Image (cartoon, rainbow, N blue to C red; front, side, top):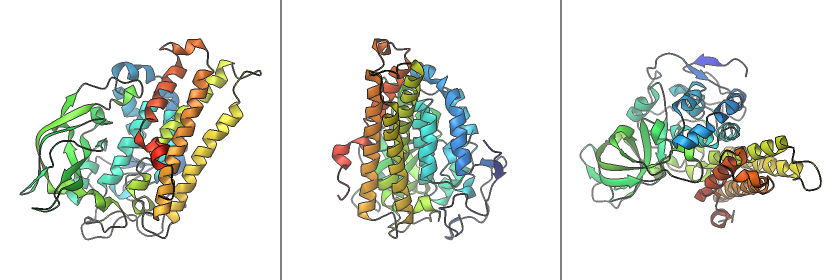
Amino acid sequence: MSAATTTSVPTEPTEPTEPTEPTEPTEPTEPTEPPNTEGPRLTLSHDEAVAAARALAPRLQKYAAEADRLRTLPAEAVQLLDEARLFDVLTPRFWGGSGLGFATALLTTEELSRGCASAGWLRAVMGGNTWTVAQLPLEARQEVFAAPSTRVALQLRLSGPPAQRVPGGYLLRGMWGRFCSGIDHADWIAAEVSAPPAPGAEPEPHVMLLPQERTVGIDDWHTSGLRGTGSRSFTVPELLVPEHRVLPVSALDPVNPSPHGRPRTTPYRMAFTAIGTVALAGVLLGTARAALDTYAGSGRSGGRTGLDLSALTATVDTARALLLADLDTLAASGTPGGTPEERARMRRDIAYAGTRCREVVNAVYEASGSAVIYDDSPVQRIWRDANAAAQHPAFDLRRWGAASS
């Protein structure tokens, strides 16, 4: 990896596709100085970020078995990701991140997942949440981005009664969440909560930033795969969420005005409904490559009964190229967030790429002989992780298969 630079406020974009306008929002709510931190933070170019992830993969692979045993990623592995600044790929430079795009998020996740799918999954999830935080009210951005670490867990849907609107914020009582990826390693949880936008109004989805320490964890993460993500459940007995940690989900769509300003770089002109799960596809890309790597090194690939590794590799390459092409299309779209057809195509191709990569992993598993059933078989772990990841609704082609819908 080439030498990275350290800076707090950049003066120009690092990707050819980035716009030439300023990288910070110009709304009156944006401060004129960057947040206070403990010093300059490492910022990466696209190539440096991908190279850093590639270099970490063999080191993370050594933690994979322990992550399975612990049912969460070991703290040492999380520290490696933190030190490499791979959780801050999408974080705006103004707030101490690298200010890169979703292509970087996809490819860094792919490289990490080649070593450990759970590490890749947590990079995709927690690294994606800084994109959301960067659009919250200013005080929330300062709370998260001024801290040494910006790890934010995700709860896509918090169940229970709608939050009550009260003076100064929203009151949550008796709520619970499941599949909270990153909860063991985060200070905050970005949760979707049903709440009324105004007194007397009907509830609608809102993003709320919850302090992890105010939740009660449930030790229920006993799964077939992605064990190292520690995506366990939690409850929120009672919590007052102040106004500055709340944002209507609709405000994350660039077709709608942002009440608190949003960065003016390419990733923030994309719609969450289209690209919110694209980095997760990197987990399937990476596990497919890991399976092919392992099979190629096993000596089974020769002869008439061996797998056609060239064809399977081409399948993975094609899936990746399709996703990158869709991201380019959305970035160049003349419609904020992309046209309905462009959004639908992105969602379909995320599902398609994940499905094809799952098939590659399954083909390797089936061709790997009877020893693959042992728990210490690397192919078994890759197979479990890939099939667990592919159960995510984002990879359901029956749901997203029609690109024109």
